[in-house]
Structures are given as C-alpha cells and as structure tokens.
Length: 406
Ligand SMILES: Cc1cc2nc3c(=O)[nH]c(=O)nc-3n(C[C@H](O)[C@H](O)[C@H](O)COP(=O)(O)O)c2cc1C
Ligand SMILES: CCCCC(=O)C(=O)O
Image 1 (tube, rainbow, N blue to C red):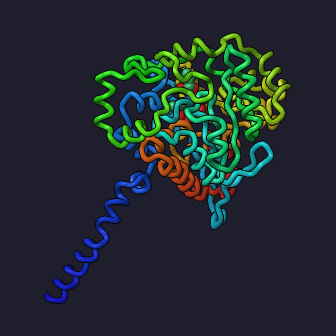
Image 2 (image 1 turned 180 degrees about the horizontal axis):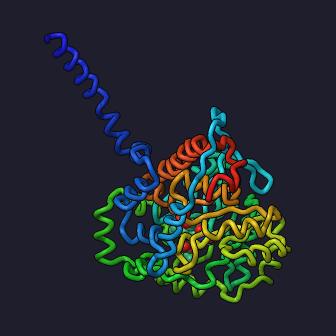
C-alpha cells in the first residue's frame, strides 16, 4: 500500500514539475495543431480561432453552396477497388510535376487574402509547403508580396494570375514573379466576375475590413487572432497597389479591377510572353481542356474554385475522367476542390490527376494554428494518403490507375 502511495506521489511530483512546459506546449501553435487529427478538426479549430466573417470568407462558397458540398459528396460516390497481396512495405508518394520531383502529390493552391487568417499568411503557407517537399502557389490577391514570399522560404513557387483591366499592372506582376523565381504561371479562368458568396454579403465582408462595433466585438472574443492582426494588419491584397483604397465589398473590388473580356487570345498572348510553364486553372470541360493544349498550356487544373464561383457546376472529381481522357498525356492534369482526406487524393490520382491542390485545408490550418497548422494540414493528408495507398494495394502514388476505382 505504502509503496503504491509513494509511486503515486512520485508521479504527481513529476507531473507537476513538467506542468508549465506542458501547458505552454498545449497553448502553443504546435500544441494546438497537434491536437487536430483530421482536416475536419482543423476546420473546427479555425472556426473557434478566427472572427466569424474571416472563417466564413474561407469556408463559404457561392449561392446555396451546392457545388461546394457536391465537391465533397462526389468523392463519396467514387468507389475504391483494393488490390490484394501486393508488397506495400515501402510507400512512395513522389511524383514529378512540370519536370521536377515533389515529395508528395499535394500542392498549395493559390488563395487570396490569406493574411486575414494569420499575419504570416502566404509566407507561412510557403514554408509549410516547402517543408513538406512540395510547391506553393502565390495568388494575385495574396496578402504578402511576391518579394516577401520569395524571401520567406526556399523551394518551388508558382504564381497565379488574375488578368486585371490594368494591363500595365499585369505586366509588372509577371515581371516581378519572373524576377523572383516563380517558375510557372497559373492563369485562373473561372473568375470572369466575382461569384456571389452570400455569407460574405451577410457579414458585410469587405476590403479593407470595415471597423464597426460588431467587428470590434469579434476582435475582443478572439484575442489571439486580434494580437496578430494588430501587430501585422494585412488588410488588402499586397501586390496590387490597393493600400489606402476605400472600403469596398470584395465582389465590387474584384468586378472593378478584373477584366471580364479575357478570352483564348489572352491565353495565347500570355503563353508567348511567359518564358516558363503555363498552367490553366478552372477548367471543367474536355473541349476547353483540349483548347488549352492547343494553346500550348503545359498543365491544367480541373477545378470549380472550391464551389466559390458558379454554384450548380459539377464537382471537380466528376469532371476529371473525361478531361484526363481528352488531354491524354499532352499536358499535365491536376485537380482541386473538395480534398479533405487521403482517400480523396487516391481517387483523384486514379481518375487521371497527377497531383491535387488544396485550398481550404491550408486555410483551416493557418486559422487554427498559423504555420504549424498549415504544416499539420500537409502531414494529416500525407499520413492518410500513405495508409490509403497501402490498403488500396498501390505502393507507388504515381502508378495508381483507373482500375482502382469505379
Ligand atoms: C479563401 C480562398 C481564397 C481563394 N483565392 C483564390 C485566388 O486568389 N486565386 C485562385 O485562383 N483561386 C483561389 N481560391 C480557390 C483555390 O485556389 C482552390 O481552387 C479551392 O480552394 C479548392 O477547393 P478546396 O478549398 O475545397 O480545396 C481561393 C479559395 C479560398 C478558399
Ligand atoms: C473573388 C476572387 C477573390 C479571391 C478568390 O479567388 C476567392 O476568394 O476565391
């Protein structure tokens, strides 16, 4: 009995001695990130951590959000057919994109106004992507500058372009991206005009944020987020000269500055001017994919912008097989929109994608726990992908094919 009590007392003393360290760890970004075991848990943590309008900007989608939900449910409609008795002692996630190897077939999607989730914004995403051995894509609407992200982390970087009516601005963005080592240009073609995200409308989401009693109350109830925001307010896109501009809804700012006349001629023009690879993002039809190939695109991203643009559009995973068939190896095909699980990635690879891009998974991670949270998003998906490939009987991610799914 006495021996037992001694043991308990000893353990209690040891626990108390390490308690401050453990409390610090629990409260640290690393601790918060580590407690999230799934992308869904990162989402729940982000929802608690950042003001509601900022969570809604990332989480929300267009109109009834039907396509956003369908992006996820359509993965459930794809069935895996596991192959028996293959040696899965070594799982190889490597693949090559645009002539270079990446450690896993997951790339950071371009996201605008990322600095609202966390002041390190796209710098944190870049560090997390590079730590995972993959590529980061910087948005035209990024909160951090082209130069800041280039300086923040060594690794492969792509630059995503929205064609603005001010073509001088486009020229200067391209020149800065090329000068700072962004190897590929990703032209996004599904924001002809701003999609209507009703959560943003309801929340009065605007750039720069409008300060009201309601937003102040949000700030008070999210003190960790507020401390970051006050120290490094990243209120507007950093590369467009919008500093000091009057508050406007995101949709009206986009509709004022993006060029709705963009056509295939502009793709041809960009193709001839950009020296590196060109990727077209937001392709949902086989005929468009073929036209991209004819225009010299090196890669396309099958994407409906995470359901944030045309509600009612098909899920990206539904559009993928016909596009992969039409392209038939003449350009690389990637997919985004709805990736939340390792099995989603297995399904996308099986249906013809060489890699996937992730948008919200990283936004949730960043909102929940900054760079540690973004790293966590990569590590959760990587771990799930490893187990899913082993159980599917395909030890090499690059070799999974159509026979694995129906
Ligand atoms: C908060 C947020 C901002 C985005 N900003 C951009 C952008 O500036 N440029 C772009 O091409 N796509 C943008 N997207 C779309 C993503 O690149 C990607 O297509 C989408 O997030 C994929 O769906 P997922 O979030 O389900 O992974 C954004 C997405 C989110 C969630
Ligand atoms: C409306 C375009 C702004 C940035 C973006 O692409 C997004 O929020 O999805």
